[in-house]
Length: 108
View 1 (cartoon, rainbow, N blue to C red):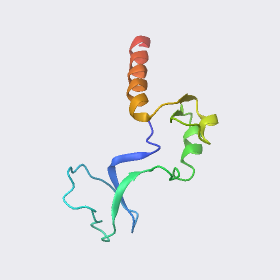
View 2 (view 1 turned 120 degrees about the vertical axis):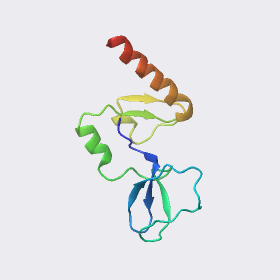
View 3 (view 1 turned 90 degrees about the vertical axis):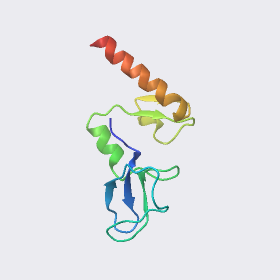
View 4 (view 1 turned 30 degrees about the horizontal axis):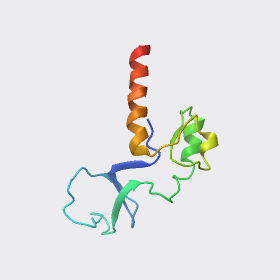
């Protein structure tokens, strides 16, 4: 599984761009600062309204990935998805994951 939208346990510096794993919870300082340059750290994720990293989707599809879009509304990427689920991710993702695991168990 590729994390097209990133990973909440990684941080990215808004100053120098350094990416690091950070499992601390709660964070000792908000906002957190980069140990390298002192810049602000943010989760290394794509927020609503932000674009995926350039070339990420094309590279993913070229490498044979099965693209699943989970979104209540149609998006410009819907036509490229192999599977489209019209629901909020908080509802649909657990159900989709359980269905996927069930189908894997029954085919092996």
